[in-house]
Length: 495
Image (tube, rainbow, N blue to C red; front, side):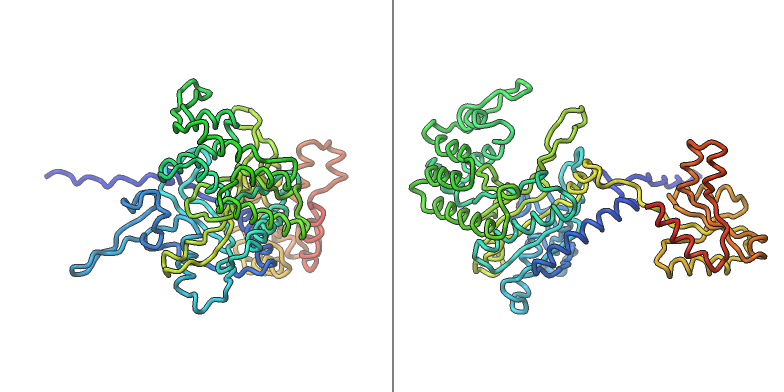
């Protein structure tokens, strides 16, 4: 009789494109989300925590390939009943599509306009790459039901405040604003009617920052050689068709007034384009009235935004400071947030157009930016560790840790094998603990405890002479009833 095959052990590894977050990462993200939430709340937005799972039908056109609903998102089909097939469900692709469903479902109970913010993970079933994961956090704020571009201006101002609140200095970022109506006017001027050709022009415009006006001109025409020497086919527009696009891309002037004048010239003859320019002018005036000048927010025709549902103003927050890439070359950090107006989104559910505008902040990218500036990534202090010298006195040790916690101090009792005291100090070191509390039989009899400053002790051990070590003791004996006061004193000295 053959022996049954052993079930292979599962591999202890994260799925491709996913990652685990440990203590410091989780704390930093929570701190950032709380700071951003305070800004959103100050602007009058209410929190919303919608379902992480939506029907594929609700996500609709946001999927990369609507004909294959399990492409682009993580989706599955429920078991059907009778002659009815089961629903297709999917993990949310972003936080905007769920908002459209929530508003359409609950609109009779919600105020108009409805101002909400949402924070949480989203999932995309796309090919992972360096810095590109299949699960990541977004932090959104949207106004639904307000047609005025004052709502768009407010979103831009709020985005600026968020960046400065989390630690991005003024001068290290810029919020760039454009309008899809202006782009539509440019496309009208090209004479293109085919949707695929128009999309190709938009994708080419989006490369302006990388290849410049000359490179865009080549890509709109016959094509160009890229940096690697490979030839990239162009769209095949004539010089007359490409002219309005290039005039649009090079319309950025010395200030908003000059830029707007150039844009009017670029879209002359297009009602939609001129309407878009007028909206940009109003946004610039509203922001200036609130004190948001070109040092923070600018009109920039090169902002396209890729999603097809944008119908009006679009905006993008770009960090302008330099970082070093994996090859040691300087480059700007780039975009960390974006959004715009999407007046047709709720219409999919209600049949009626509902104006809406919003922004999404990429939390992971923003955290990476702060780490690049040295403002995040430092290990957070671990808990004060109360060591165990006598198993029979566990209640006394728990009493100590209870007093420390009641005073707002992060603390824990060592719960491993207390036989080797050195292992307890190694544990405290691995936790990044600032202090260890020691009470053996002798200390208990005398009513005292030993409080060891682990941070100072490590510093002394690295560089101090014997005389300096004697003059700067890192371990203190204090009466038991002064334990909390001494710990607070040491923690204050370590800041």
